[in-house]
Length: 389
Image 1 (cartoon, rainbow, N blue to C red):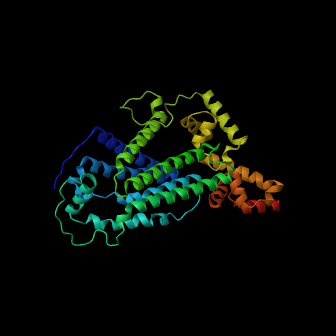
Image 2: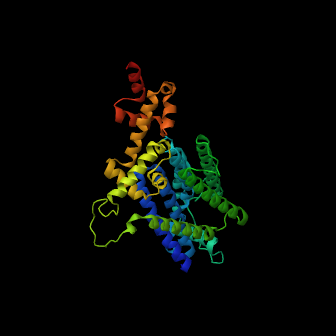
Image 3: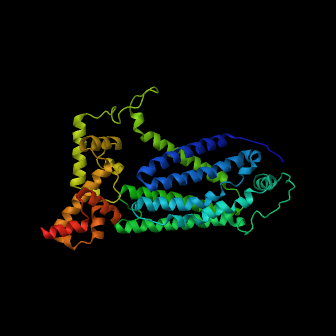
């Protein structure tokens, strides 16, 4: 069996992008576990893409002939892309909504098991599969397989299933987006809320990629290799993400030494006391006058944009002056607003579900938990106490 390796300049860029994607996905998942499952799904989506790109790198360079055991190891991740993307969209727009996520992973997990019929084949089988795709002029190896690599006869439809999975989950994501837009009275191409607009843009980006992949497979044949187009696109995407992360990092806004030891969180902050007073005033105005907390997609980054300050500075002022985290601050405003609505005459006519939506929560359980934590009563008990008094 031949084992020729050819590495071109593009292959180096691909490898760098893969390592960057792996690191970024780890960073997103690690931090997302503390704040938002949407970030976890986004990180897993990126990691799946990186693993697919890594196998394409092995195939393009010929390194796969030296580690034939890894041939098609990434195939199951084709079916993880759709679910991870859909769950990222759903968790971003409805962060507190409970959902049966396991349903979405039936096909990917099944394929993880099923692909072992192929992975357990002799290396000659994998070598022949590789050269049929990349080097059809090479002489195939002689091999006798003792069991079928595709007992159900479905691996031959792997590309078709990938296309169906991607498009089905894109449609599901679109339904979730349209539902959210309807609830906030926004149009798909005229969105004023930054976070929803970002989600819309992510959806458009992914549906274009899915349609491009599908079109190329249909036009060139399902067994054709479209990695030479998709993988460079992936590299550009990763480099753009890396640039956005580094360009927005506050770490680079100040002098530093590689010999620095960890210091207090805001010890090197450039904010003066007058600046902190000004930022605090803007935060209070946005919360108390404009009721930014009532937006169920409100975020620290969104608040920072509203008052034209950096996220780091807004977080610092909330922590130092109010002795709260951003989420604790929002929760306190939402509960106080709920108490106000309940005290008003119209409040007695509100259902708890309507109250939840008005104050900015996405789920009744999260609202009840926050309300009871601050008042020691559930919203229903609080309403009854008002009637008694």
